[in-house]
Amino acid sequence: MAYKFKTDLTAADVTPPAAFFNRRAFMVGLAGIGGASALGLSADAAEGDLTPNTWEEITTYNNFYEFGTGKSDPSENAGAFNPAPWSIEIDGLVDNPGTFSLDQITEGMTIEERIYRFRCVEAWSMVVPWNGFMLSELLNKAGVQSGAKYVAFETVVRPEEMLGQNRATLEWPYREGLRLDEAMHPLTLMATGIYGKPMPNQNGAPIRLVVPWKYGFKSIKSIVKITLTEEEPYATWNKINPREYGFYSNVNPEVTHPRWSQASERLIGGGLFAKRQDTLKFNGYEKEVAGMYEGMDLSKFF
Ligand SMILES: Nc1nc2c(c(=O)[nH]1)N[C@H]1C(S)=C(S)[C@@H](COP(=O)(O)O)O[C@H]1N2
Ligand SMILES: [Mo]
Image (cartoon, rainbow, N blue to C red; front, top):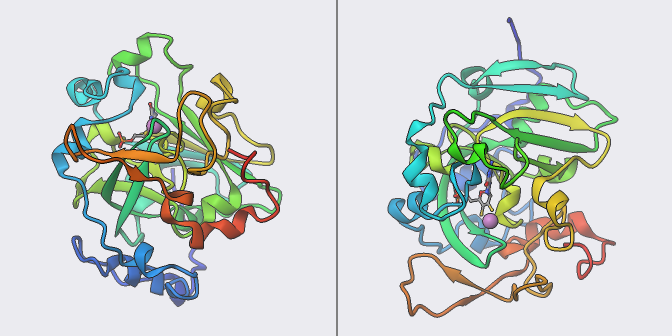
């Protein structure tokens, strides 16, 4: 089908392509939307002294229940998955609904490198050098209508290629959602790669969400559908156990998971006897995102 993205982006929205592995890429990207300081980005979050985990660590220690529940299952079982060609259906409260190829989706997008902390609700963490574009760019092209308040996401269902989907470990498709302001936040990334390479199958090929201030399960993989909704959407883990997995699930060291503390985390790659590190509020992105939750009791909202 013929599809034309809206072309009403101003010059200020367009950023020069940033080179992979350029630590300044993040700053360059943000300059296009008002600059890091205008966003209140701390030097740490924007530039940072974060040392990324190795490719080996990032691609062999995964959660992707479509390929099994063990940490090594995704890397061992995702070889049968063929993420090309790929398309994403965008529907709901948008001006330009439709089904778009990955090329159409990424056309004109600035692919930036974003080195983010990544914190799983299970209390382990990594630092990942993602490549991707801001979800806000895609939503702006889709044309969000005024009644939209949330964004819903769905993962592909392919039981022939995803052996875990032949078991009822979760209800398939895996689904997640964000409030619209969270989805439009400049930190929220549609990631298409890691270390400048295409997204590995086990990490959510060919395109997945990354929301660095939330527990990892919000960062849904291998997305085939995006829906703008008025109501808070279904979210897989939240529906299974709302007491343990909130819809918001902002990283918060002060809110204990019913079965374990969230005060500290194990950085993957530190070795068996590595010291745990303190978990940061909003996973270290408090300055950038706390404003979105003013008035919410963060000790209750998890
Ligand atoms: N479709 C889908 N997305 C998913 C998951 C999953 O099982 N299925 N696991 C989530 C969880 S719990 C985490 S911690 C991250 C893990 O991402 P990574 O393997 O790239 O580190 O993916 C999230 N996205
Ligand atoms: Mo997770």
